Amino acid sequence: MFYREFTKLNGFTDFTTLSVVHTHYLMLGMVLFLLLVVVEKNFHFVDNKVLKYLIFYHIG
Image: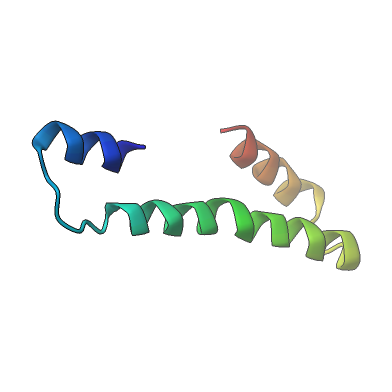
């Protein structure tokens, strides 16, 4: 949403890489941790200390 509003306010009509950056952050922030949940369900490699940090990260 930022890149659309930013380019619209500045009258920029050419190609921008801000839309690609958004997709990249979405993939790193969501899909990576969803895969981590699936792997954890199968292999149980996260102990209680790491689990606290992961819960804190997801709440944030």
